[in-house]
Length: 154
Image (tube, rainbow, N blue to C red):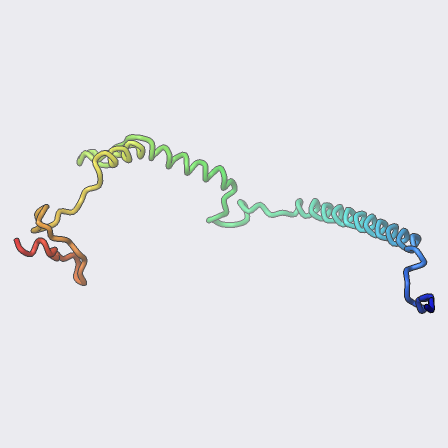
């Protein structure tokens, strides 16, 4: 048997050199330098804008003196809390609505309890007795009475 030895051709095989550490190190140093320079420039720009703002604050206009009514709210959160406190006081207190007619306002929690006990008022059905077997169905002109099949023989 003829033993021939396999020899790879040029360009075939494994790498014989390693990664260039100096090139990667230089790139890392340059990247860090660019980041540091960028941060320094950003802080400088921030200081510049802060100085500009401080000088412009002295030249601001007082809207209460310069503009006619209606004006924007100066304290919207406080105003909203005041309005809600007034509404809650109305909802949680007794007062006369019309003393001559005997109409009073009661706290809303008590009104809900009374309504739950008594129920809502219902409309009275005209001409229909309970147990007639007639069913009220809507029609084009309003509510109409349609007799059920059991109720037709009565």
